[in-house]
Structures are given as C-alpha cells and as structure tokens.
Length: 271
Image (cartoon, rainbow, N blue to C red; front, side):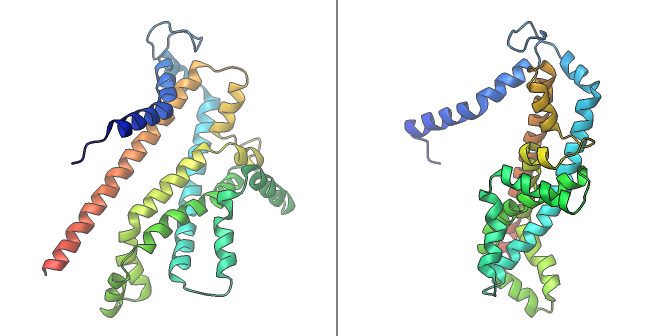
C-alpha cells in the first residue's frame, strides 16, 4: 500500500479541517449548559430534552422527513428512467432537447426554479403545502439522480443483458433481474443524494411551502434571525448524526454489492 507524501497529508488535513471543524464546534456547544451559545458553562444534555418538547421544531422535522422521503423516491424512479433512456435510447428525435431539459436544473438558480414553480402552482390553482414542496424537490433532485445512474450505465457491460435476452428473458425481465441489481449502488446513491438535497433545501421550499407546511430549514432560518439558541445546536447535531449513519450505511451497502459482483464474475469465469 502506498504511503501519502507530506504534501498530500497536509492538503488532506487542511481540507478535512476546513470542512469539519465548524461541525465539531457546533456539536460541542450542543452539550453546553449555558443558554449563551458562545460561553461554555459545563456539560449538559438538557437542550436535547428541551428540543423534544418543542412542538414547532418537531412538526417541522416531521414535514421535512415526509417531503424528503417522498420526493427522493419519486426523483429516483424518474431519474433512473431518464438515465436509461439517455444511455440506451441511442439517437432519437429530440434527444439533445431532452438531455438539456433533464440537466438544466443543475445550473438553474434556485430562486428562478422556486419562483417559476410558485407561478405554476398559482396558475393551476393548487394550494401550497406538502405536496407542492414534494413536486418542487422532485423537479430539481431528479437531475442529480440521472447523472449518478447515467455514470453507472455508461460503464455497464451490456453483454450480461444480451445474455439474459438470449436465455429467454423479456426486456423487462432482463432489466429487473440483471440491470437493476448491478446498478443498484448507483440508484441507492442517487436516492441518498436526493434525500440530502431535500433535507437541506431552503430557497425553493420558501417559495412552494404554505402556512400549514413549514420545513425544518425554514424553521431554523426563522429562529436564527432572532439569535442562535442551544436547541438549534442540538437539532443540527441530530441531523448530522442521521446523515452520518445514512452515509455509512450506503458505503457498506455499496462495498457489499461490489464484493458480491466481483465474486459472481470470478465464479462465472471459472465455470
């Protein structure tokens, strides 16, 4: 195994420090006894207890989770279908336009996306609430899923699919039994990416949410304008823990899938 040079070690250390020192400080001060977030007065978990009794934060967290799960699931299905068409569809009329429209939300300012969706919902007479936020988050997150799944499909060995077709599978069965299991790590990664983007979104949700559907980022932003409280630090720490568990789980699943795939390929070569 190659050892890192001193330059790479320093660069890696500075990069990690820049990314994670603010989060470490936030986590430490979530256990602060004092109500003043910048003055350390001893270790305490009372702000986690206060957070569990704050119905406004709990309701916002529940709305955020519902929106994130629904929008990331729909975006994963649509994004995977779009990626499959772009990679396997070959040349068809309107391919360039279709590709551009799929990837346009990647570079579109969120303010423009949010405003256009707001005008759409008002134009069709749709009341703003959880469903409008789900539709909005699906719109901008499906393009990220499409990019992730497309990168896996491009490197996919099509001979495996063709072998399944030669053995009598229909196109749908070949996709379900061969293609989907192989690209599953990319699909899972796309779902997690869409889920994280939905959890983090503030701008688009501000345009498309109604008075009865406030997401957690909107609630935190409104609270921070009046001053950072230890409850917000505790809430942020819980969110960091959830995301960390999700990332570790995805990494383990991906690693398990790759090991299994390599083992199957080695067994196929031996037989």
